[in-house]
Image 1 (cartoon, rainbow, N blue to C red):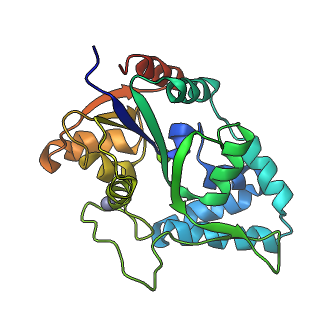
Image 2: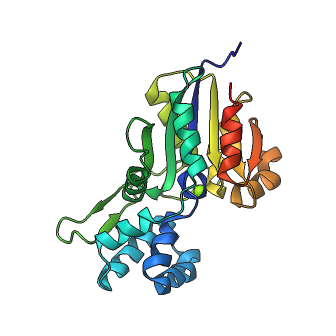
Length: 248
Ligand SMILES: [Mg+2]
Ligand SMILES: [Zn+2]
């Protein structure tokens, strides 16, 4: 009999729940020259601020809300990932709460989850950078950092970008949620997923996508940083589906 009665599954969004990077994808579809420009500017800009700037430039070149939404709906999203999220949500033993924890933005994630039919009754919360379509210019997407640059900053010491510390956000969610989880499962790929998995316990599990930033950080810093959780590597969403089926 399973000793795990309830679990929390946390999904990073880009290259984890979704099979692409939304910030880059929108520009690759609508304005490749801005995609190139973003790549060139990346090293000396905070990422969220840079995305906000690219959306202003896209708008000044005539880009519209309809185009951005269409690009998001076309973004790769693996059917196996959809299947396994739905399947684990309806299973009752163990019961599962799901959370999205992402450095993308609220409009991108909402648009994609709605299109993929995962918007209602699946995720407890989507923690990400706030975004909205501008009131004066409804074709302009305004993106802001989750941590306001004018307010108190997060206290992360393992290298999270100024816009958000995913580790702090994860702990704050668990506290807010007011429920003790027998197991936490984290699905991620990027170097900024290292901070939250450092906060996981021995009974928790990280599903780490191969050949990306998180795998490299685990190899380099996992031991010295005191990584405690178990981890399993995956490459395609179909493997996450296999792993979920074994989570009893
Ligand atoms: Mg990612
Ligand atoms: Zn952090």
